[in-house]
Image (spheres, rainbow, N blue to C red):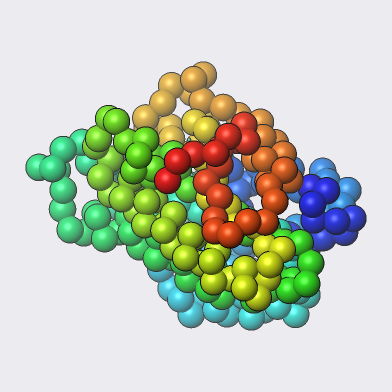
Length: 232
Ligand SMILES: NC(=O)c1ccc[n+]([C@@H]2O[C@H](COP(=O)([O-])OP(=O)(O)OC[C@H]3O[C@@H](n4cnc5c(N)ncnc54)[C@H](OP(=O)(O)O)[C@@H]3O)[C@@H](O)[C@H]2O)c1
């Protein structure tokens, strides 16, 4: 992560997940990363995306050792309350849709609200949020997965607005919406054959290289683990 300089601290939110855990391992191998803190629902301090006070409290506790030049939010969910993604309009129900927005868009927005204050002002910084290619409206050629797609598209819009706002104070901040590829995890297991999915460590190695190569720009950047830009 040369763009972050010789010494930096990092936070990974969702560190108990497959991709979040791989980010923690990947950053522990980077000699420039002096400290990586994993945050999950069961860590101390920890947070629940659906409880803003837990998010605020966690950020407040970690602020004592700020700044963190790299923050990765690797949280997210595909199945909601035991129900898989909706295939057709007839499958839609309000609870499942609202849950998707709560976990994939509202919670991450509140995490960004509280955690961006922990980032440096006059130095390079990267805020990366795991999104998904299926959140791209222009790339949607198959349909289905209503709640997951729509909540990731909403997330992407939140990241774009946040990038425009946050880079006024932090012009060296990169805000990235990440597509990790199809990765072996609890989230993907019901939908992909394990051997067709990538190992989380390999996906994260690609994502770390991608992040390293991004330069600050006006607005957020939607990129995949091979460094390719994705149309919103
Ligand atoms: N795997 C793929 O193929 C794939 C493809 C495209 C995009 N993505 C995206 O990558 C991200 C990570 O997915 P993954 O595959 O690593 O899935 P995962 O292993 O299921 O991890 C999901 C993480 O989200 C956390 N989380 C869920 N609800 C939460 C809540 N209410 N509060 C706090 N944390 C919560 C989980 O925490 P707990 O450990 O506490 O349950 C877990 O750490 C997601 O945003 C997903 O949409 C994944």
